[in-house]
Length: 329
Image 1 (cartoon, rainbow, N blue to C red):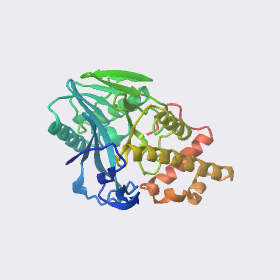
Image 2 (cartoon, rainbow, N blue to C red; image 1 turned 180 degrees about the vertical axis):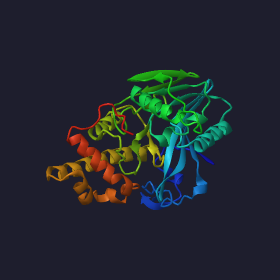
Image 3 (cartoon, rainbow, N blue to C red; image 1 turned 60 degrees about the horizontal axis):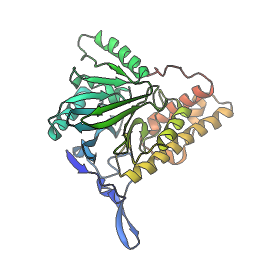
Image 4 (cartoon, helix red, strand yellow; image 1 turned 60 degrees about the vertical axis):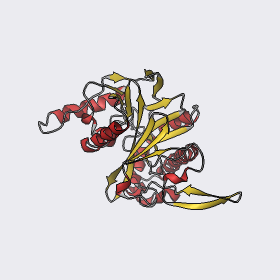
């Protein structure tokens, strides 16, 4: 594990070993390679988990996750206070979530007291049974329904680990005070799921967006609300935020993350517009998948697995067939 104090400057290219030199005003700085591929950045599997201190007591946690032949990072965030630790999003299985818990214990002896389910998808919740039982687990009502349904299915299997379900709900905004630190839980609208939550630290001006922000990862839409997703990002961009933290991809300097959030918003628009173009030609979803061209997004991580799903999901939106509950998972 490497703990990296994140400097709030543009010269934070040192966070990634794979860089290219850029000369500005006769000063040589390093520019981060903008990709979600850890190996293109020069990382190895041994470089993970990757932990960075974003502000005093606020940390990002990146762990590699396989997707077919590709690997990319799943990002969690945790906040250490004098009254306990708040974790925003777990990892994809019990082993990886326990590893994160162990890494947190190396930083503080404060117990984990709050877990925020920002995305209800398994890559952020499947390891939640590793967390202590006597904690508060927050989720949006839509995500809580999904997780309770999954728990009922899992608990019917006597060999499966028990599922930690939410015991506190956030419909719009919930303001927590933990160790004197204000932590806001925000529902900014449906995006990657029907119950996306963000964690906002107003003093530090940090917004953890979970899977509503995928840094250089192809828009994953299997349970998304495409047009609402764009609107949700625009709400986040209008907030008083210095650092936007993604749920997948790399955690960079504040300036790069802000730029990449706009790049990601444009990527969503690009995918939606391509689907609209093919839909207007009278193609069905299967035909559109074969003909879809996403320009520079063709090189983004997970394009091969997520491109077809994105077309299917936008077609459902265009046909007025998206489920209202956001429970497709």
